[in-house]
Image (cartoon, rainbow, N blue to C red; front, side, top):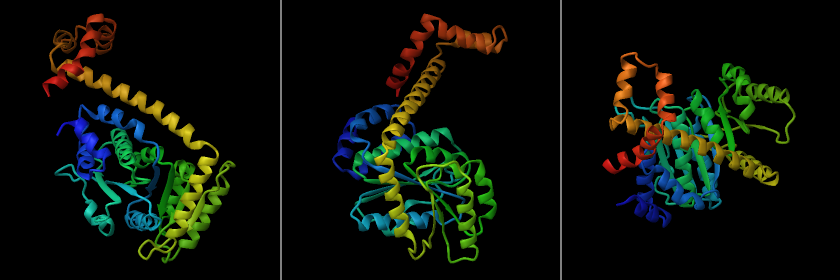
Length: 328
């Protein structure tokens, strides 16, 4: 089936077409930008909630329960679960059937596991684009769960409208390191597994640290939950909905969306130029110049400038992508 046909079927509610388009985007197919352009007018309705925090905090179970609370209100949900990569296949170690069994057969819930594949910036763009597909597909809430390690979680925070940071009572060291980053970007804190000793202490520490932040219109909540039995999940949903209303009342969504579109334009432009340069190299257009660089007759910096300043070099770059695509 052609890509335009897949988009047409997806917009009509075909789940298999959606899954195939997601695979194309994850694999950075040459038609990725064509797909995103085709659905652009259909996105912007879904609300994105990011769940992050250290491994073992119970994020998967919390997302599962949170999804149940959304479904109880009749809301359609999309889930993107970012898993560690398998060292053998490069795919997600945990599958969507394992982590979200209670919703797998629900037609109004679509779950997609994707692996980090050792990627950072590329992962952020792929996650954003998968969220756009789910948005165009008609999902009202999109939940993104990260592996909770390093740059990955910071990237997802830039995608989410509301960021939920999930901790456990034993996360004292994690709380201390939050001063460097997570504390500033969290919209809601959750201390999960609150039946364990130390939950109230961690809650108090977080609330004390939040008082030291610069004054803000939105007061970050610190909630206690037990995802295994659903305790506190309804309060979490109510808090997320209050944050959504807060953002809408102050027009924050429009400003953030405008900045995201600008950022995405710059990312797409940079990636497209990189692809065309690679296409030009693979097609042999720059062989003579590459040989000069290898022999040390010209340094890499002057060589790059020569390509960009030479009208013939620019025309090759402009046509390289088209030619390489036609060969595919």
